[in-house]
Amino acid sequence: MFGSWKTVWARHRRWAAVGIWDRGLGVLLARADDDGLIDWRVAVDSTITRAHQHATNTHRPEECRAAAQGQGLNGHREPAGHAIGRSRGGLTTKIHHAVDGQGRPLAVIVTPGEAHDGRSLPLLLDELRVPRTGAGRPRATPTMLLGDKAYSSRAIRATLKARGITAVIPARRDQQKHRRRRGSAGGRPSKFDPVAYKNRNVVERSFALLKQWRGLATRFDKLAIVYRSGCGPRRSAGLGSHLTDTPSGGLHGAKEVGCPAHCDSQR
Image 1 (spheres, rainbow, N blue to C red):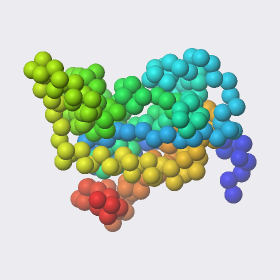
Image 2 (cartoon, one colour):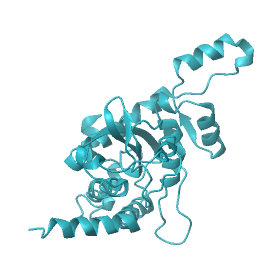
Image 3 (tube, helix red, strand yellow):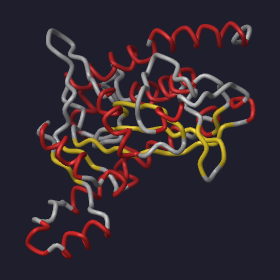
Image 4 (cartoon, rainbow, N blue to C red):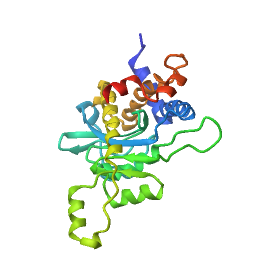
């Protein structure tokens, strides 16, 4: 039905290298943004996947430690360590995902499993670029960023503030104790909106959808760009289902309700 598996994989590999999957998703995102369907209250998080032995029989030099610290990664260039690291779960890869307020995919990167979420956030934000349907620069700045305590740091809050992004990130308990211990020198507590934070669950649900594909739930690919690009068809399929030309579930219908039916049923 699909022909030779080697031919399919080779084409998938070439498309991953030149960014075909990302451009396809960009077209869908541009249509959605043009119709006002994207909720720019962006939620970010990561999930760890185990790397199968078929994916780990590669040479991973010491340079891959730089990638684990959130450096030297590029969506279309294979990192030295193939985004495979060693954490408590063994050899693992971490998927970092950014979704809009309705759970629609916006950006994804992969890092070694031990990479810290906070250090990988700048790379994830660099990948967040929604093209325009007409002339103009891609939109890359959300109005709000929702993240868990792993993203709670002065550097991240300062970066978001400089870009005009409202940070909805709870402070860690040790940070709260340190501020109170310093008294007036500790400064004011960071602003936090608990009502807006409740919507962070959309990124958790996005991982549940991604991992319905066996090739994403467990990593079998040796190359990081091939594994990352596997998220492209999965994300495009989820987004494209809401961008049809039929009157019942098309662009205008989705614009009126503002959220897919399954979102309302899971709230």
